Image 1 (spheres, rainbow, N blue to C red):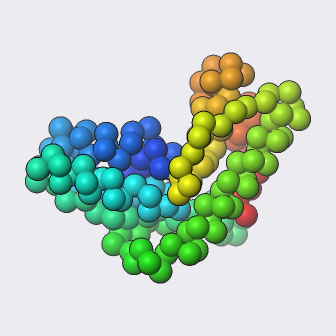
Image 2 (image 1 turned 90 degrees about the vertical axis):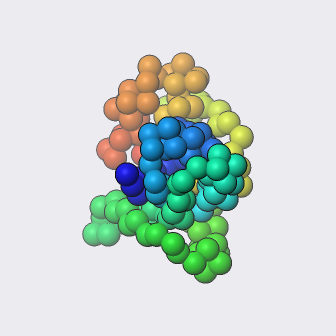
Image 3 (image 1 turned 135 degrees about the horizontal axis):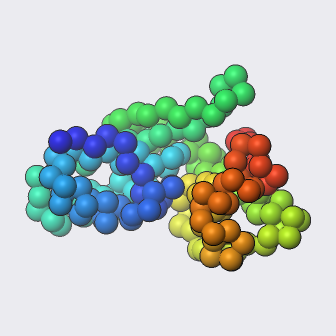
Length: 163
């Protein structure tokens, strides 16, 4: 079995790279692609986890690039990219994601819903799911879906488009 589109907590996934590898091994996945949004931060941990489990699983380094085309959000998957060529533009992309998240947090505060982000690793790509989780933690939303419905959806009052 192959799983070629997985996110970790390095972007908008719910499992760390290590937890994801362990879950994939338990599900008998033979090849697992780590395709976080706009970051390669999860690759090394996933590969280390796979090696430490001594399991027959191949970690496929991948990436899901977020972009906008004709005014619509578009995601492009890529596999086995050249990390060294990608690091400079990805660093800027992650900084753009952080600026976007900050603007959304500012809008929420202006609307009377202040949030606090948890500490994020430098190479983590924050997105709307992180803001939704912060709204839930702050008691402003019942669930992430509620946060998207009320504030973060594409037409929501706290939405900020990609740079």
